[in-house]
Picture: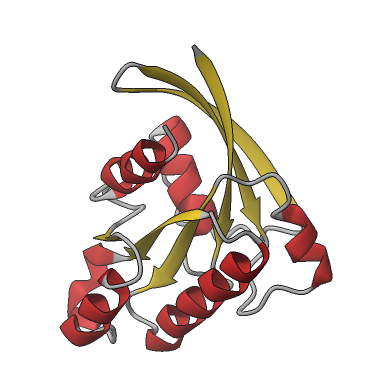
Length: 163
């Protein structure tokens, strides 16, 4: 049975949401910063266990809170992929806040957190305690859109929750 699942990408500006989608969908990365205005939609077919998925990814423009427009993008979503920038600790708090806001609207929403820019580990501000705390709420993966580390695993973990 084929399933279609809508997943929204949420996080602050510049955390790497668009780059993670490009890595996941096209196995590509660019150093050029591309600002998302509004929302960009991509799809990918996945096989998870016995299920075939059409994952519809909504890459929503970065923000540390959901306003009415962004909240409307969540309608019909089965899951959210939250993104924080490991080199910017405030983006971690924003990602958790965004999840709580989204869950307030959609209580059954599934979630995974990607803490991005693992390739810049020596510059990370997000410490082990923050990762442990976040893991109490949802699965957390260290990722790098540049190298691809943790990207497939994070998306696969969310897809697994959606089956």
